Picture 1 (spheres, rainbow, N blue to C red):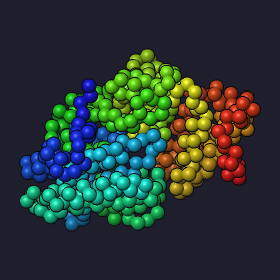
Picture 2 (cartoon, rainbow, N blue to C red):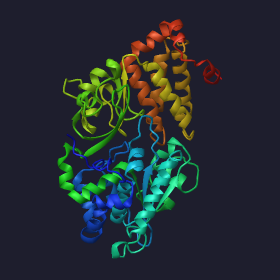
Picture 3 (cartoon, helix red, strand yellow):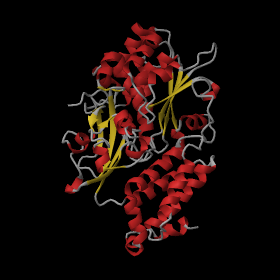
Picture 4 (cartoon, rainbow, N blue to C red):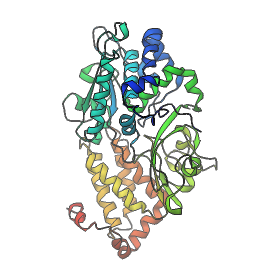
Length: 448
């Protein structure tokens, strides 16, 4: 049984309220941090824990915090990235909906460690329910002396504000998020300078994901060394996984990093196997932006070792035979799923969400969408697969932000592992067109 750090009290009635959350031990991390540890003590515990960013990049959180510049007389900011937009990912929304005070407590602890007196939670604009829930939680925390002036009589002041985005996936990239938070168009910034030096309003800023900030609460309560005992190697602690697709039990699961992928898919404790007795065909392990893997490679590495739910194990073999843990958006495809159609659907999303600032991404995602639509709709050519790989290579690594990479990797990996399926669509245009799922109206737009 996985030890629950984030979801331990998720099913306690009323846990979304301050009263119940406090009764279950809530805000004890704030008391410990402010009264006995101090900012440096909190930072050292986070470093010791080995906590890595849970938003996708997996960068060590304590190290990221230590990069924060501390010039005299200049404010510092903590910004929580709650712009959860990755297709297949919904675990941050789950946390904010059912246990919002865990995030607020993490915001206070993290802000205290960073010396921030004003912090923001940037929430995807469509999540109006979660925005209202967070604002209520902030009001409750402030009414009980955990936010505002002179928190717990310590002399430390902190205000936390919720800022709704406008529904742009690109604002999940930290510098585009900061641009949007400043009231500008959400275009990614060229780095350097990095946000730790020049972020929000040109001041030192740390941007962390919802789950990352929430995880600091158990680290402070139990100690960084205890947290580091959970997991495997440099993948310490627990991780929330958004499990979807053709699974018997889709949902949000908290796992210990290092859990075998096969156990996660087939165990009754987790996903309960593939729905309707079907066979597993492929998995997108970390949200739509990571390489897709066929069943044999997601269950075992190319050397035959069991594949584990960890940053290192999933990446073993590079992009030839590996993938990424990413944001934890775990999508399982059964034997009847069309890889071509799903790849086209992902690409359609990235074309729509490209900010258009970089030519390779702006033009390349459009080309990939049109070519994949043609293949799926029975109009493909034998040269299209090589064309797609070439376009993906010209996007990857040639854009200001990672959206270009995110668009290229699924396409390249789908062709690498399922080329025969693409070729079937090309060689059987009549059958392929008959499976077009009513896309005739879309054809007008795609071919315009």
